[in-house]
Amino acid sequence: MQAASATEQLSTQVLVLKASLLALWAAVSFGFCFFAREFDFMVAGWPFNYWMAAQGAVLVFIAILAFYAWAMNRIDDAQQAAGDLPDA
Image 1 (tube, rainbow, N blue to C red):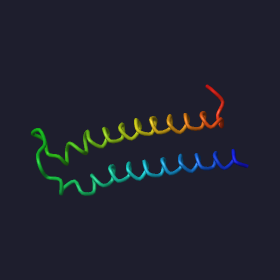
Image 2 (image 1 turned 90 degrees about the vertical axis):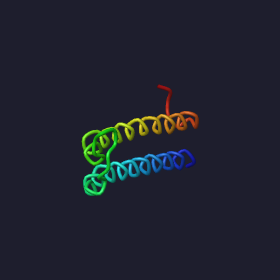
Image 3 (image 1 turned 180 degrees about the vertical axis):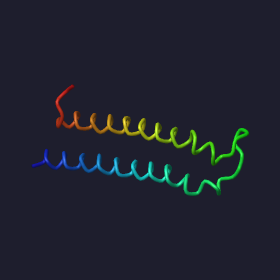
Image 4 (image 1 turned 120 degrees about the vertical axis):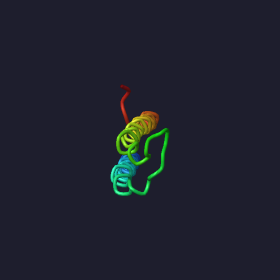
């Protein structure tokens, strides 16, 4: 019973992680595009709204992927330490 509870708790952590990162991705992808005209200032000689549409959103997406990989490694390590996962 306790092992099932630990597995459910970690499954909940994974779902919360996925939902929050998906919400961040949606906010960046749609938020910057929707409010692009309001971000009308210059960064390194380029308009910020153009930079975010062309490069910034992709960089944020890569950062989200890197954070997801790091967080899942921590969750997997926690499961292995608890004895819920076999060694790889």
